[in-house]
Length: 409
Image (cartoon, rainbow, N blue to C red):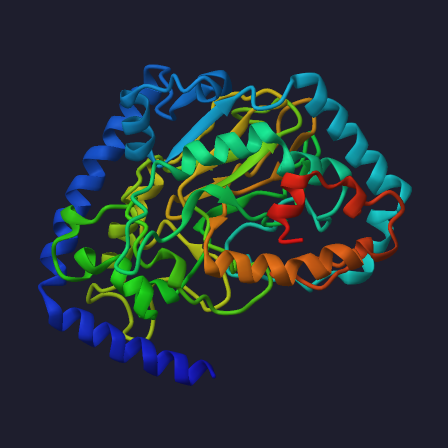
């Protein structure tokens, strides 16, 4: 299989190189990225955060300015503060901890190591992510009306028009059950290297991905629009544990504890169109003909110092967030987790992305619903199935009408 993939990469790279002067295109995008990174670094040195922030109340009252929307589109990320009351988020954090302890999660997890190797090629080890999907707090966060309103706002930042009609419905969402992170203070071993999710080598070879990035691959990268949804719901990803089968307009999480710089939390490259650099970098002559830098089937798309040094210089840690705040980033935005947690409190989050209604997402949601009913790990992830016999996991009785719709039940 590996030899077949390498042959496919060789032929694809040759076709893309024959389409235009990829060296000239890369030189152009490299210059633009250096300029953007310098702007980020200068702002950071002045103590100014470049990551857009807004209040959930502005979303709720439809008071988000055009300038803020443009800033989010430019940066590819946003912090939405106050989606949940702080006290509620803290209570959820305690409840998840009790859920894990009551069901002896740590003891059981030692018997199931090695099932999830999605981050295996990255330089740092996997973060402290717990393979649970159906605790009551996770379900409550996903089906909350405030979360639904936040996702509607985010989805509407996209141009949904497509050749066969709208690519997705921005006002409806299907649940994508993901995990939770609980990182202990003082931890120095659980960082995560810079990467992108939702496709690795597929971004060059899959026909839908090629259509998404047509301007990049044809030599007109400046015309590439990260917010054009056309073909986004039609991509096919290499099947592997933790490779997302849904289309997400934004990846994201909800903070259950306070966290910020040096707390072992999220880092972002706040440049929405940086994918153009990554795609063109792999087509340069110094990259082996059967490789796309460090892209590997079934793994996260890594960004490293050897191949992408200009991009790494623009990575910044998110500003401090409070329990109940949410953080969101475009599926093509490079992100990472700090190597060291120097804070005094657990850095805990519930992963919740925005996965709007479309045929691709509905098909996954219907399959996922059976896993929910049986307490199994969500279908995209390693079949650890911790919660099958967990006491206190969420059931259909815990779902609101909105929650049932989101779960395709």
